[in-house]
Length: 252
Ligand code: IPE
Image 1: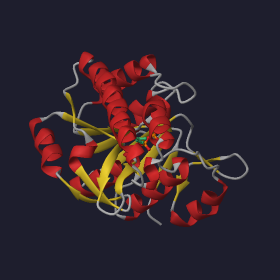
Image 2: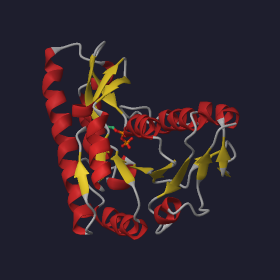
Image 3: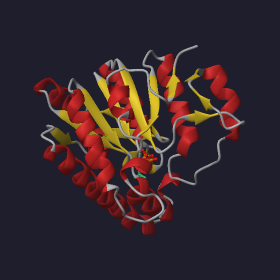
């Protein structure tokens, strides 16, 4: 089984609020349809989830009643994005079934503590493609948190025993300080790069958070490949396990 993260920078235009990259998602749906096999998709928030979540400071937890409307608006924004992505997947005859992450995961201090994993397993067993998302989730310590799609991906990959993960972004992969693409990264080499990653201001830690999730996941036995999904066929080839331009996250 393979996990695919469709980053918010791929499915949406992050420079414009609530704008989806319709054409990119259509092409990617076609690439996914060509591959087949057991798959779980997780999509990010991009210009739907992040602006609303940060405006209401939901990543800091619940401190005031004024944030309640922010929870509702973030949830609704993610619901709308999911609906549009899943509609495109279904139009390519993919049995994509949305599962709301906030109904599956319970967090504590921003980390997943419990999951109704049977839902995901059940759909997979039927041959469907579960589609989850980054989300605003309940948090035992903070009230709410912003759960990144990357954490969802890593949690599912571990729990479901995924073979590998493919992480689709809008860049070719991870770059070193000199601007060179790093084709293979481990905990040791990542430690040299992480301090130089520009903070994104997103609700979930941007590229830095992603790298940390993927390194930990690799150490737990699931390697992943980060690819630029804006370039045709990179996602398809990465899903097929072919050598592709990108960054592979591996154990030491
Ligand atoms: C964020 O999910 C979800 C919300 C902001 C509600 P991600 O952190 O996975 O989103 P991207 O991929 O960075 O946009």
